[in-house]
Image 1 (cartoon, rainbow over the protein chains, first blue to last red):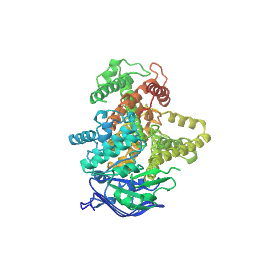
Image 2: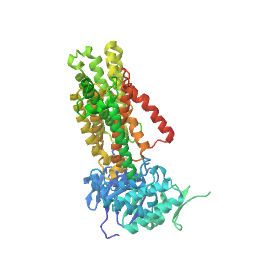
Image 3: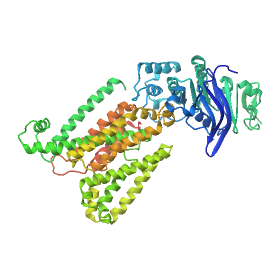
Image 4: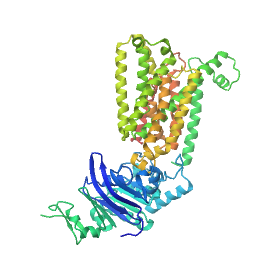
Amino acid sequence: MNKEKPILSVKNLDIGYPQKQVASNINVEIHRNALTAVIGINGSGKSTFLNTLSGNLPQTAGEIFIRQQPLHNLPPRKIAEHISLVLSNPVYSQNLSVYDMVALGRQPYTNWLGLLSEQDKQAVQKALQLIDIESMAHRKCGELSDGQLQKAFIARALAQDTEMIILDEPTNHLDLYHKAFVFKLLKKLTQETGKAVVLATHELNLALQLCDELILINQGEIIAGSPKDLIQNKVLHKLFPSDLIRFDEKTKSFWVVEN
Amino acid sequence: MSAKKIRIYFGISLLFLLCFFLLNISLGSVQIPFSQTLKSLFGQLTENQAHAYIIKHYRLPKAITSILVGSGLAVSGLLMQTLFRNPLAGPYVLGLSSGASLGVALVIMGGSLFGITAFFLSSWGVIFAASIGSFLVMLAVIAASFRMKNTMAILIIGIMFAALTGAIVNVLSYFSPSEQLQRYVFWSFGSLGNLSTQELSILGLFWLLGMILAVFSLKTLNALLLGENYAQSMGASIKTNRLLVIVATSLLAGSITAFAGPIAFVGLAVPHLVRLVIPVSNHLILMPAVLIAGAILMLICDVIAQLPGSELTLPINAVTSIFGAPIVIWLLMRKKKLVF
């Protein structure tokens, strides 16, 4: 058990919509330096969970605390200083340059016109350097490949300078190399910057290999723990119908059953 | 785009604005030498008092109206396109012009039905009716925007309002005598030239208020380029900003429609033209660029509408589309893609 105070803690949380409960009685803590993956099958409620954590969706019961403060009491401006997001929606402006996009991450700190101060410019530069995309700073978002665009979005979240980054399926549309690259990059960020990174993903094998914590959402139930705990408790074995996919403890990975 | 190129762009466009402003004032059905135009503009005595009178009381207000109308519509178009993240949005997507049209149609064509007095048939009556019409539609849209989480739904509600009011106007037109119908049709052509100094100052005041509110929405509009969820995660208050943009657009487009009629095309096209020429997405640069470009385009359209050298004038609404649409089509074909 981690003794340090968590960045974010969730107490008896119910998530969902007025007509539809998605999961209930969730208790999780998110700590510094940890890469946490939220896993579960399609429609299990991963995005609902992350949207609730980031304050985009109201909780139906229970409480979320960011640094001991109840999340629902905080205005968007304050939440933006604690949590930054990487979402899976497209960029609407093809004309937006990578630099300008990353600079938007400074919005919680800029003045009413959004003008960048010297400090803001340094933060943007640092974020570009960390992700190693300085060379494409002046390219337009419309010209980038999916992999490059994802890096730019992660740089934007870094520029926002929050303790916690939440990513919704950041490896969608990426090839295997870029999937692994993004996971490694996020792992590196947690280790080098001390940030807590939480991501929803379908890349179970990568998550098992690289994440420190897993939050499994399965039929309204939440099981959280280290990959080792989840393997020992045999919860991963029941995730998919066993006639098609089985979990192999030795290789810590999922395999398609051959007939 | 480098800061230097942007400065050059603004320098050139301001120069264009000045040139077309002077050109607009110096041309018209009465031929006035350019030197006299300049003299009367700067308050010096001119040989021909009639010329000075025409310039001061007719052409100058008309040129200023052109600038206010063009820039106001273009800026509201930009605000709407970013708010709805839709390149087809313009200042009238919220149903403002249809609200104004309904108001005007009711006083002009429904006058005999409702026993409307002479006041409502005067030019102030028409302005009043148009303002009330667009104001009521604005209230309805704002009420909808408080209930709706989804911005796209507001866009569709605006279009539905337009369809509804359009239908009522059609029914009124169908039953009205030809003289009243003609008066309504003339209003719908749009006009830049009939504003008194008093009317012009009221339009200017609304324009200024709308522009000030627009400036306050720029930071969040930049965040909205990434979508509403991102904007909120960066600390923006989506609903407050939506209200700010809707009120700014209503002040700009609503007052313009009330004073100059429903002028099409400019609001939709100018933001695209500007994005084609300077490929930036930062609204702190886009807004002033669109403001200047809208003013220039309207001054040019007004020059064409006057058909210099002849005594005829074309309806401004026809000119903006006849000359503007092919230019936008040509630019898009040349660039082969829509940048937004």
